[in-house]
Length: 307
Image (cartoon, rainbow, N blue to C red; front, side):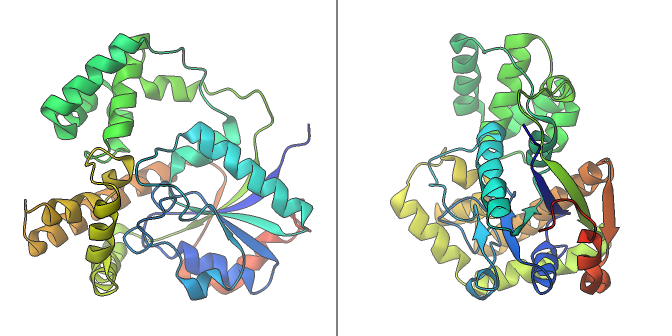
């Protein structure tokens, strides 16, 4: 089976990846394919910074805003969906351009997934009972002791992934990060030409603060309230994302809006820092800064997947 090919624009949150993709679309027949785990959710287009309507009108956009709040997304399922979209793009003689910041999704596409043995149901039940009793922050602290590599890329409110990492450790005797390093695939990985949008944490901080203010002005709080009316379940996976968790605490009367915004910025900054660390270790990335976006099309020249 011939390996699929795609361009991939990666980088930390707030660095300008959507802008980069649209610059590329001015020169090439691009279809943008999302690989941000939070931008999959239908209820939170503003909070998760999904491309706005005028941006999505510039070229086809796939895998944005389709997942219900109550559903989770695994890296395996994402890889399957993304492969389908990439194959569709190539069949249409378009350039598939993955855009996002979830590093594990890139790894799943390139290398396949770890062949982790099934975890006994009683182990999973015990972890979930602890999650209900003690909350995600306590379990995240445990994970930081036993598997710091995995803990460093997970938000302390990400109940689904924290629970998964702990149940893998307890059920197999090995950390999730160890399994990931031994990833295998039964089909060829996607060949990616990776373009990284470069920005320092100091450069990102004012952008992130401004973006949160813009999100609130665009109705982020009402977006969360409406989602809660549809899915009044705090354990629903969609609420674990940064921004959603902090605004939900405000909607439920646990904090005022100023504190929710402060925590939203703090947690976004921490996430950007984790992304910078992750992508710094990513091999084969061609890094560009915002001022170099006009030349992005040059990185696609000679690429075998270019139609």
